[in-house]
Length: 158
Image (cartoon, rainbow, N blue to C red; front, side):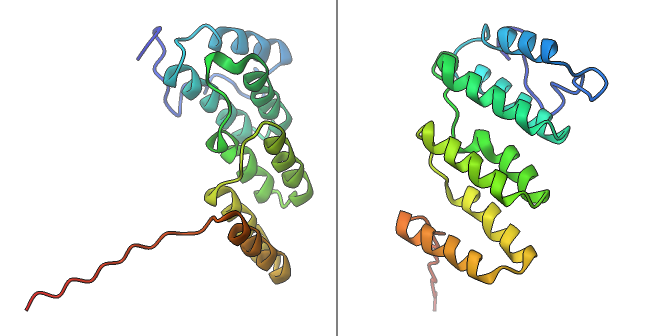
């Protein structure tokens, strides 16, 4: 806990469809920007993004990410994990084209899609039955050198 801010999954429960407004979001962004630099601030931004995605306010969540990148949020630039809630909700909505736009946005911020990000695409393609697209994701992962690491060691004691 720093700056009297202890981030949990309930931190932004006061943000609901009924209470949400652009004005509220702007005040939250200004307030979060005053938190201690580092983990406290980054977690607060990430928690807000998660809450907005739960309310299906994806464009507002992307606005928060853009704000983080623009002001550099005290050294708390967006990371791949920052985008997980956005990718998750868009894939659940089967909005693959919109998700690809988000990945392009990630690229402009120098944030690479990691194993989890690629997995969102794999799962979405699996549910839509698009095997060719899923194979394309696997090929892209291979090209990028991303894959699951399995370190299985068998030890036999006799």
